[in-house]
Length: 480
Image 1 (cartoon, rainbow, N blue to C red):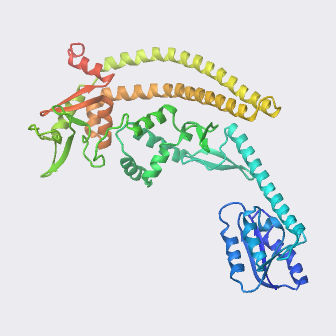
Image 2 (image 1 turned 180 degrees about the vertical axis):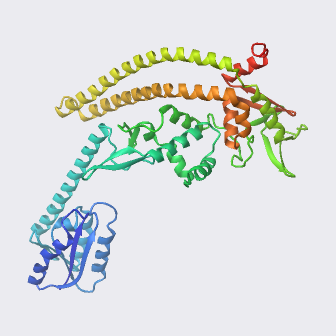
Image 3 (image 1 turned 90 degrees about the horizontal axis):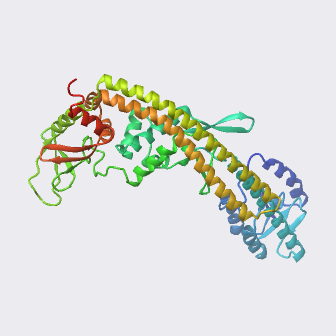
């Protein structure tokens, strides 16, 4: 009879195909079988559709004479009963004999119930082994996740580095993490669309992201300290790249709460989508005529004789306004001294609040450890443990978020102060020398509710710039 020798491994760490073939070769000669084909495949017996195995089945189905399939052992052929159905149909039709070398088992058309039961039992034990391995993997993953260890490939901005033989650790990638930070900072302002971020990345970093990848990065909670595994959140132990506050701000912009909505955001007109008509509330649109860019009301709700205003005229009005967003040097010095006093009190508050949060965190971590011991000792059920674990983990996540917010508040205190003081000194200069996206950021930082009233630009100033403008127009700073 013609014989097919089949050797299979799931991966290269297992017993080699050559070793399996060597063992069964003498058996094939002893049984006086003619080797028709030999298959050496590397394929999981439990994942996917087993394409390579299916090709062997098709060879047997097409053969006009019976085939003997020789394998080293049952688990090299199958580890589930789904293959048994196909193989048993071929056996019953007299097209197939299966020889399991190590089990000394031959299955053929006239096999008795005892041999068939041995086959089924061998498959069952092979399947049981796979399930035990799966359970062990799940338990290991659960332990890793509880310890804050991510069991898979980290997201962009992190990387794995070897720390020992067959062992790696996730660390922050110094270069790509800065790119992630920049993407979050740009998008959080509301002045950047995903398309402009893609262009900015290409221009500044010579990298080319798709819109889908930008969206994925902007939704990844891993960056502020919360990893997701099978749709469940777990705090991780790795350094965060961004703060929870910044992540939340980006989500608000993404959902449209603070995002400026305009149809042609990609066109290089700095004021498109930022101004509405004071008369009817329609958008002020921009279009190019004879080499100049003009802004005018769309008059979507009805014509009302709207004026057309050149872009240079709007820029001039804004430049004049930003000239007034300038604080005298002596006032800057006074503010700086005040900030030093405020900072001393802020340090004490931060230390006290941080200490309180760390004590609270230790309490919940202790409760998680105790509930796990209670589960092992049978004092609580698995469902009770899952409920307690999730509750305590949520509490830990909340505390970690508050700690991050505390640190972020500390960082943002200096960043915001620096930006505001810098802008207060050089607002007009910065505005006039900026590119389109920077102009939009400065406008968004200082002004809101921009309206075109005829040819006059109306606005509302955002704190603290409203106070700065009030002082510049009043008597307090004018004498100087």
